[in-house]
Amino acid sequence: MGLRHRGSSKIKYEHSMIAGLRKFLEQEIEPLPFVESIIPGAIKPKKGVTPGFRLKFQYPTKTGAKLIALSGRSAQEVFVVTSEPEKLRELLEDRFPEER
Image (tube, rainbow, N blue to C red; front, side, top):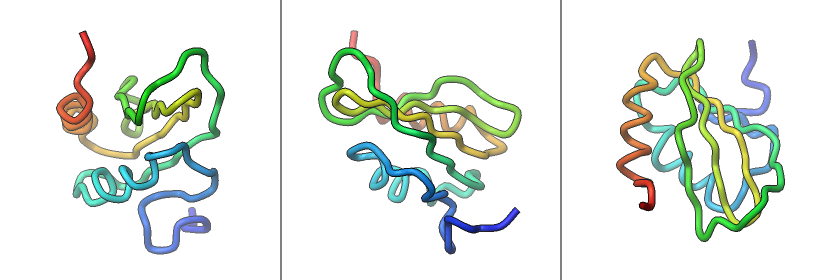
């Protein structure tokens, strides 16, 4: 496994990213010591509009966690390789509390 699209970054820059995602990943997620790598997926249209930017924990995976980034009318899956998905879930729930 090479770092073909990464350089020295933990983030794989193969796909473009929805508004707000790149900055958030670089500033908030990449520096975490328990995060090994971050793989953004393809951008997909969604129904409804998300004002601003949100990143939500979806579920743990064998290698870490699947997140979903939402901005405007777009959604993007983000896979994070981590040994501590619960720490990541807590961080995201603190940063983006659910609107009631």
